[in-house]
Image (cartoon, rainbow over the protein chains, first blue to last red):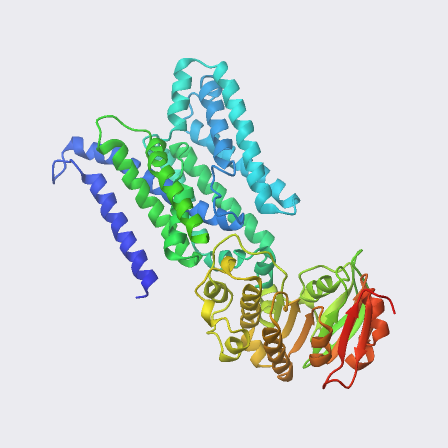
Length: 321
Length: 249
């Protein structure tokens, strides 16, 4: 077994152990009582699956986006995909809920997904027209985020206190929003996209040196970039749809993995998916299992992730000197 | 035929229609002032830049007719590229573009062994250039060993000290001797004189002269190409020495 395969195996085992612990922690032993069975099936399993999906989706899509956009700091939040989803969530929560989609349990996830895909499409069209695709995408992302933020701020003016509280809670992220009907759609979509992206380590390695080098190495760069970007956007769309806006996971996990393991995407991509999922399992446990009240997920990820990211940047700057 | 044929190949507003045939086993030097069309020519020969007119044939087949992966196994192009924003090591760059171990011949010619573990964006310009030369040659190494490769190098000597320039051209000469076609652009008239089998002089996207070095590299042609005074000194050493200055003859 190679060192990389061993590392993947250990991380997978750690993730399975953590998942089992969070599932069974505090239950009253076998056989499970009817109440414990209900807690397990209706609360903990959906929460665990949400954590796994969100962590893997955000980390893997960021690992891919950082190479595609040739920016080590790219993540769905920075390039505006999350903002598009947030705007649509705000539209649904503040205006749409009472009007047309009240009976539709898929309303919020569906709106978020549409928002994520629309902003991705817009960014992609801008990037294709611009000569310097990577920087243009970042700038377009900042513009889209600002615009979406402004519209959400205007929406606040015209909404009631209940809707505003719902939106605030959504914007801070939660692993408790997903239910079985939503997860049964999200899971196969995520498995398909993750499966595709995990196999793209080699062409993504070529893209480290730019699109011309990748084309010379035999890659149809336009087709590949469009497909990989679409898969990344779908993953982000699904993650934001089921858990709201979750900060820093996408940015931090691949960034730290590249500092630790090097740049080979054949190991970075699977490790990003596994470590992202593992991290979100722990964050999910922290948000509910430690204190008596449920903490917003983004509050935990940003509190831990912000200082860690600053430390990583300072360390990198020190090495470059 | 084995080799490269340019048939009225043109790129709009950058390269006038150009017809040329270079046999496999030759080393061709492309010279000319900045903006003459050297990079455009190499990019279009590599199939990276679409032609507005004409075609490029590699071993009798249109370059556009090759599958990208098939072309990637036979043709290498060294680009004039900006440094990557990622801190890839030299070893990463080699490993990502080829699964072959680094051959002795490449290691000896580029002498990149001491800094294989260092990030590319922390190397000097010349060191990084040597790594990229090594990388592009390694990417088609099996074809080069079979004498079936097309090597296109756009200013490979940029930032290289003269020892490494000579090491590189010795390697390219050895590769051409094996039956590969090597086309290299640069600005050094002495290297051209010492190593070229054929020379192509470009100016403003047009061919000013082409053929054997001794015929093409006259003081008059070079002065015209570079808009600069060029004097060729003969009999000083094995090759002519070129003296350049801004004064017009």
